[in-house]
Length: 437
Image (cartoon, rainbow, N blue to C red; front, side):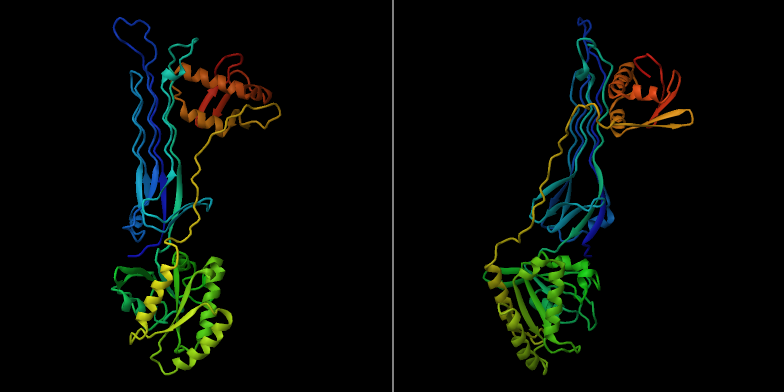
């Protein structure tokens, strides 16, 4: 089964929690804190495996979650970092963020890899919070949550030679003649609904991969017919073999067919107009083909004299060998790989700054009946990291809110002793003049 598009969920592993622990060795009075940091969560990494040719595996497994880091241990021991999750993808896979439609990576080479969901940092143990004024803090952090996102995988077939043309011009028959591939062949349009690949072996160590791409029609670049579903596969082919029904068996003019398909390729991606192209004038065993061929040569010479026309017949195999040798000749003159715009992986960099007077506040306050609700992404992130089960943690949290100006803002809104304050899922009582809620 050929699958060339899949939507999957990826999540980096959460960081391990930090630990609150104390030294209790014999003959060591007031030993101090000994809680270690949690380990880092694993990353979700996509890695190219040249042995894969389809995204069918992602039809059955759509969720990929990396393992979380190990919790910190006593004796100041650091929890182990989690192993990364390696997800194998075929060459030619484009990874797109489903929310922003940003291209995360374009994976084309064997072994190439990209981190699509970073694991969270481990939480700090209480040894990290020791100070001269508080040498034995009962304070530690939870591990940071791993990044999560939905991504869309789009596979663009990696082939040396791509066969393009209108439906029923003989592309599948040509592929079946020159390779051992067995594509579906029928006397009706869109017999081929998925790309077919085959290896052409010319002997003397010369070979190349040929792809039979589904038939294109006018308006394909806007999604008509199979449209965008398969136009993207043409982008990866190094040489285009444009198969034309030179006998006009369906009442169309061969030159007009060639013009329409080339217009569709150009409208989809202008770079395809510069891709080396060979015209395979097929069905030359038909009586009307020679007359059409003479006219076609004259018309094509006026617009693209650089394109060579090779008359063939997939049925009688006339001219097939010449076409294959010409394809080899053009391939040998090209670089080994198609130019692909690399998507640089930018490491996340956190920027810390002090709030200056006049800066916009990092929180908002609204009232629900008698309850004051404080909303702030920064505060909620901090609460997720802190283990809010000790006096030290609550004291640190309250002091942080005071420095941010939350206390003063609540007083201005009318908060008094006993007023209920809600932040995320936590509720507190406001205590005037106290160092904590």
